[in-house]
Image 1: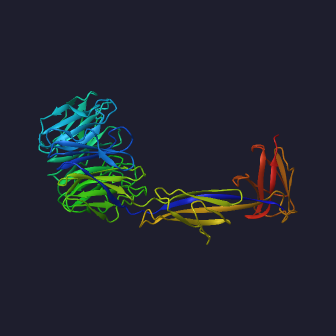
Image 2: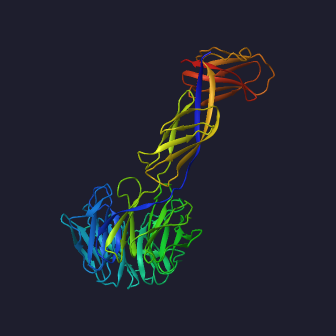
Image 3: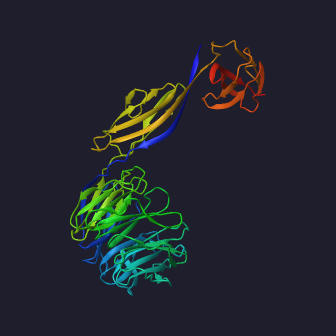
Length: 543
């Protein structure tokens, strides 16, 4: 008797293991001193992140263009002059010409200035001087008119200034500016905090040790959020948005310079924040700025903090619930301050750029951390599962070993395995010389159901049941020679093993209508008390 084996495989869950986050210094780019306001974004429109930084001591801005393979070099316009000590840069297209312009906080000249990108470089289009010690800028369309605006934090004025753009590079001060609720506001950032689609503001008070949240009204005005401000550590210098507990609501990390720690605040649907479990979290000395990204590709956002006095970076791997693994430390040059992230070499992993207040350079650190293990599978009609490695970021030297969960194992990137009915835990382990120290694994729980069916009826119990006509044109009759038996039923499957219908049987003769099913070949099982008594093939013809 010829038989067909049909396999149904279903994944119950997939397990990925958090990997270490490792960075390697690959480039040191010469620049000016007293650097802050480091930005990683695509300035030349080629789809690759570039790096720009302000050198406040020399009143210059440096731009480093990316060739896409991880090598950056000074752009032809770099450096270009900017009067008054640029310490923070907010890129955006402020005149709607498709180019990345810049809103600059000029600390020493007490001004905010907008620089427009043109074919030869950058030129100033707007300057605002009625402020003291401008410290940072943040871009957004605050009045929802399709033209980019920006906000600026002026530490000496104890205020947040909101500038509304007209789409040409010119600006006017918002009627509600400045917001004066903060003592020494060092850093301001824009985000969608309370889910109303209007840009909001978050800023830190360096002297008040507070995080302020202000909701935007969509016309350029702002009001303090309920519950704001929130207490932070001592001398908060910067804040960064993230989503550290994977709940779709924005969270915030605040870097506290003189208490040497970070606060992690988790957001909510209402826009209110709460300290995450374990917050504040200790860092190195003089925590200045945080870069947020999923550096180890495990689906959870991580944090890297620059520590100015300990000349280091603190690397925190996120657990996905607002908590973090104990940090690892990367030693860098003297007095790291600004930090930003981008995928400089196009390998799918976020890298780092670090600038210094003392050292006259920008360092590029490539993310050589572990890839994320993953695999897929399919099954054919003979019960053979075909597995395929889909781990991202592995090198060509990687090797693959498999534990199929039934005591058998295999190797190679795409092995196959034949299963019996049951549930199995399949584990892929990748060994990659190109990623030393990494434990790259992926696990899936796979359920396998084999349905042994005959092209003709099975001999066992063949005389107990009779099904006719077969082929059928819309209905069948099931005759039983064992009256009085309980829980008899006919179960109909597709040829792919999917259960189509179950029909309860009673007595010696049962007529069943099958007109609702498409013509084709089906597999049936006659069962009694969950015991299969007979299997066979049923051919349905068009009526």
